[in-house]
Image 1 (cartoon, helix red, strand yellow):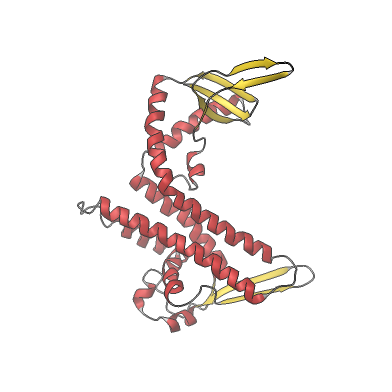
Image 2: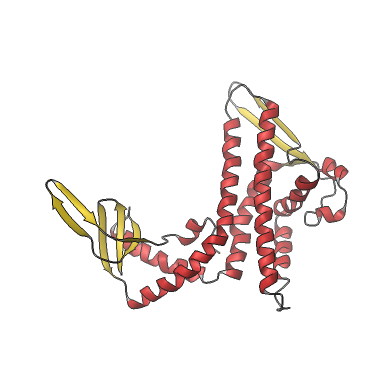
Length: 277
């Protein structure tokens, strides 16, 4: 198997043969990556939902005639999609954690302990863990939405009111993580959701990788070193593997190429849609 650079259909170059040790590592890592990708794709779906939310927010920052009720409905839809996906991720890995460590008393509480620690560091993270329950059981997520503009700018306000949330559900267990009291006042949802999303992709995803797929860390380093080797010579290319040298065949003025490319990660964690632990 060969280490190669690939930029476009007619720009392909082999650099060298992979060593036997590199080939063995690749065979080991591709199995781990395949399993991990299948489960970590949940984080990619979360990112797509967040991007949909951001794109719609950006569309509101344009001076245009608006339908307030329709815009608020779209905001509620996008927020609901996002929170539902975030809840699915947490439930998926919490169940997996409990299954894996049900007989290991020293580890079975790690998932809950991690969540509590992260909540103590980020109120935004704690709030949205609780807020998902409110959206599911008591009402849609957007409490107040307003859009205004003048000659030079457009302003969008998307908020919730802490007192209103507590009036709908004052049970302490409903606000286990955030300890919402109702005295917090107006809650700006846009910056809080951004902070929550960053924690999901960095801290929570990192915890999941270290727990379920620790092999991804050396795998990422392995493919990164090979990528650097290729791009040091061909900076704009993608690092790939090939099972044979490129074959060319002339037909008049045309040159036909035949080669077998094996797509492998270049930046593993970026391609998985999460931050490196």
